[in-house]
Length: 288
Image (cartoon, rainbow, N blue to C red; front, top):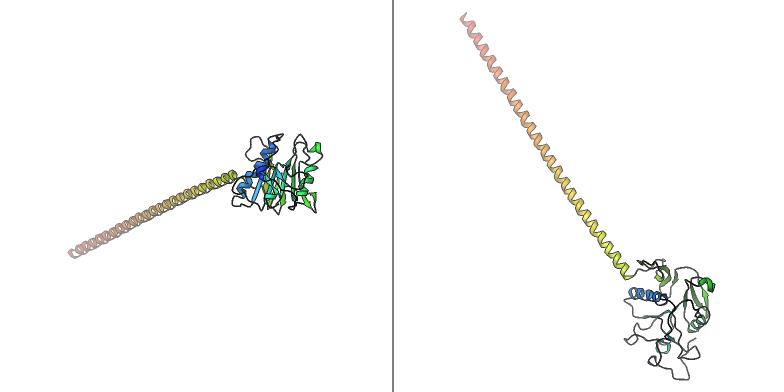
């Protein structure tokens, strides 16, 4: 456990080196923790009570020398300043952080074993780190472990947890493996997940999805406008056809009227002819 009652003067962060300057064995040791950091900077962009360190020394009081830090590949602390005193940290010094230990540490196993399953396990337990994540994608068979393991501190002892992505309610995030989105190299990385087990999208992915949604919305509006134009065109054609039908009906009625008038005129002519003929016959009869 951490102790703030020490019989000697503790050095300040200005007096302590930022790291041990030990080079990493491969680029993933820096790349993957930074993937987590950059995603967290987007997810928690409105929060200022957290800090995620990458390859940064953690100075503590549980060892034999407070000037010798433990340096995880990545770690997350909650309830601390995002930027210490408005400035970036060179290291994470427990006695300058109100003895708030990281809630999560990440170690990536490389070709040269670094005590990830032994010494560091013990150090992080003494620090009170709640979650300890070990990522070992290349040498897990050599070390007789799984490629991805999450340990939870229970009564001072780390217990291996099951499930991936693994949900951490105290953090409000899950962690697990995935393929790096839009990566031509198809690299496997670690990422943050939500409570449903869905991977949190990066800012670039969200922007692409929003742009795609906007394109789909614009396309839907274009199709709707085109459908409206076609509907208006169909209405116009229907009105034109109705007008033409009305015109045809009017012309047919005119023809019928003219035919009736002609028939009436013919009948009148026949009547007049019959009258003249009758009058002529009457006159002939009188003459006889």
